[in-house]
Image (cartoon, rainbow, N blue to C red):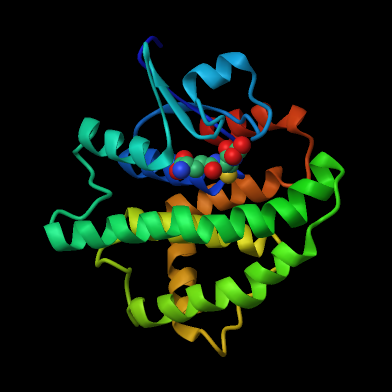
Length: 231
Ligand SMILES: N[C@@H](CCC(=O)N[C@@H](CS)C(=O)NCC(=O)O)C(=O)O
C-alpha cells in the first residue's frame, strides 16, 4: 500500500516500542522493519543522520526520533489521543517522556542494556562494569526515588494511560532485560505502577514480541515481527 506507515527499528529498542505502542493504541496499520542499531548504511544515514532508530516512513515522508514521530502520529491521527488534552497534564506527560527517553535512556539503554546484552552477545566486546555499576548503584536509585514520589497509588502518571506511561514502561523494561531487579520493598509504588503499565494490552503485546526476539538471530526477526503484527 502506497501510504502505509513503515517503522524502521527493532522492537527490542524502547524507543521503537514507544512508537509501536502508540500505533497500536491508535489502531493504525503499519509495517515494521526490525533493523538493529549500529548497523545503518549510507542510505540509512540519509533518513536518520544520527543513525538511530526508530524512523517513520509514509509515502515520500520520512522522519526520525521517537518523540517527533509520537507527536506527528498524534496530529495525523487525532481520533485516539496518547497525549493528555489538559495543557498542564500534557506538559507533564511530555516531561516524563523526555525524562524517560533522555535520562533513564542514557542509563538503561547505553550503560546497562548495551553493556550487558549488546556488547558481549552482538559486538563480542567486554562489558564496562564501571558504567553498569554507575547505572545500577548510583543513577537508577535516584530515578526510582523520584518516580516513587511521582507515581500515583492507582492509575497512571498523568491520569489516563498516555505517552508518559509508554515511555517510562518501555525504558524500564530494558533494565529488566539486563539482569536488573527492582527492589519492590524499597520502591513499592514504582513496582505496582510498572505492573499496571505492563498489564496494558499495547505494552503486554510488545513485551511478548520483544522477549521472544531477545537471544534469537537478527536473521529471524523480520519473520517474527511480521507474524506478530499479522496475528
Ligand atoms: N532520541 C532518540 C533516541 C533513539 C536511540 O537512541 N535509539 C538507539 C537504539 S535503542 C540507537 O539507535 N542507537 C544507535 C546509536 O546511537 O548509534 C529517539 O527518541 O528516537
